[in-house]
Length: 381
Image (cartoon, rainbow, N blue to C red):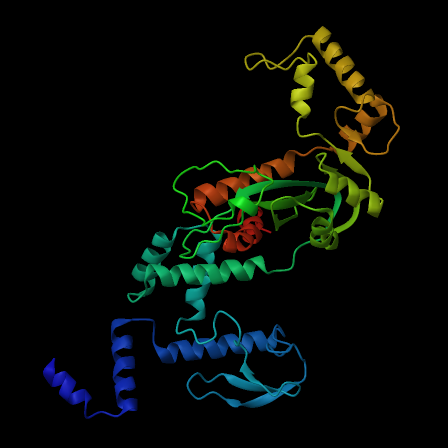
């Protein structure tokens, strides 16, 4: 080792770099720089050919010109005519200043979409790609970059029959050293760490919960947004979701006032199903199928029909807001358009399982990224 140190002291900076690159290539650490450079240049040519790269990453201007070639990578440099800043095709992307190849990032993206754990991703990268210098934190950061990029992709326009409902995720500051207390007034003391389950002071609509509003249409396209800490307001819902709703046939929600106000303002047909729908039926003698037979008698079915008809007239069960149709007319519309909240409730189950089981709880500051990424993981959108 002393002889090596003595020899290195006589080398120039360029000679030391050449030794390092030779060592990396010999031991397949991070891949050969030359191979990486040629791969990146080939990727650049493909992106330019397909016209994916069309504007300055700093100001968004389309007025830019070529400005030489970067010697270390062989990538074409550009200069913006409007902001005078220089950039290449990978500026402000996950590949900027990355020493890992495009193929490696594609593999990481594949494993991220398939919801592999960090340990499994690290194991694959070390054994199959020779990334011996990687650590857990680096792979976690790579995955978060990709999840953030996927969550930032344009959201779809929802149309037809749209189901909308909110769910609640407990506020979390997992991994943070300085904890922030969101409780008001006399409760705004120091935020203590939570170990295991601790009951909230103000319930699910209080500041200890993040409100996640979800919407899904009949095609399966969905939009999931972390809308607020605590109670959802009319203004927040309108600002968050109006841009994603286009020519709906019916909007299906529970009886939360923000949805009724929105549909009234926009003039949309609104199907309302109270959150305590099943409880109302049970309290009025409604007969349900038994687990063993799965059927009810003809007399019980007639009695159920009378119960629903009576409750509908009293406005206690599901209805189409501002409609004066009879129960039979309403029931025909409900069945014809399949009005319900079934699909959005399934989406809520996916969210809870994803956040609490697959990811073992998620810090609130990353919650929108995970919520935005979830439709890609669940539905493949």
